[in-house]
Image (cartoon, rainbow, N blue to C red; front, side, top):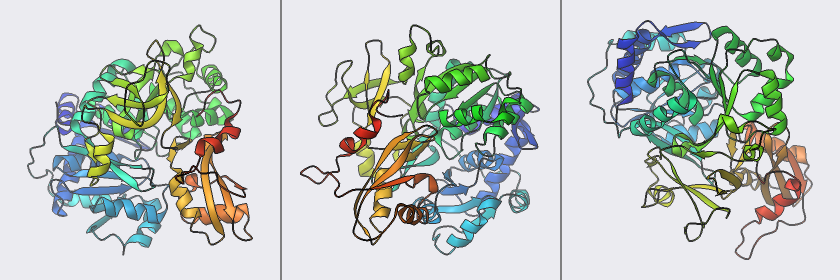
Length: 512
């Protein structure tokens, strides 16, 4: 398997003057990007970073993310992107858990850095993007110290929350990406004329994959600073973007904004979407807004280096004979084996039976950072990964996601784990018990709802504000309902399915 840093070197030699990335008003060629990645690597080495060390970045989408990703890999270090929507305590946990030696932050997040500077025990150097960063990578040697990378080395460490609410570092290797990206190139129809937009956050697996895909395939990438519908539409028009990935909630917002409709987006050949299936209404609206664009759904996880299934373009006709497949997550990628298993026994189940979705693919992570027990529980001896999602395969091999084994909520493409929110709510002095569930939401697909047993005089707004002071806002309940009791089974487990059922009654899917 190839080493990704060497792939970049080959692209820089083979197409030195081609634009690698547009980022705002900046444009860098492959030669320039390769040189800047080298300078970033040399600056990291001068700061004492070596093989196996982690460095972290807290910023919105940026060219610096890509430079540090490849620069770190050139000296055997690993980049840890941090979700910029997290609360300061959550940021501190990830940076400390990763034992990051260097922390790079965007100007918008200097206040977060100031709040945390005395709590980052492993960080020996902080850098702010802009003049500080430019001086830092420009002051040292133009080339990093020699390092012989292996394709099995960890390339990036992305944090994905677990059911306990504590984020887990997902370790993805050069091999993981080198397996996924050639499949992506074929299925998505990528070629030298492709202009690929990175519209989703780079701390998500989708944003990371698209950034790496740009360089792996020698494309031109457009880095969107943040997922703003109008800015995305204007970038599509300005740079003649041909391929983009969006979550359905964002695609819905684009249809609601006149400024988006005023943009010429006729260059789009393929719009990929994921994190939730698309509704008939949103799909029809998107087809009307983008009449020459093909649509493809993808399903995957951080632990699987992104997509492992896809719903083909041909299945996206809401009036066609296969319209029922729009409720599915599609068919497996060529290098992926899917199995539906009984969650308790792991015995394989027949078509049509709901069970836990297992996948075996070279894209599977090598494990969770510093969590051997969690890794062993997730990666089975026969090579299958336990996704924690529940679903079934139909007779034609299409995957239908029925529910989530781990009760995860996906709101606007963001993963929310109820246990994390419940832990915060239980810290309130007037909450004696609670449960958090996902309920349908027209804009976000689903949104967190807190069901609370109160022990004193407290209102919904009080509890929402309490959560917002301690969690990223997207994780906080949008509504609170008071109950006399929370139903539990004899072992004390909350009966989440029973709680969710009334809210999802009449919905086409158990989960959006």
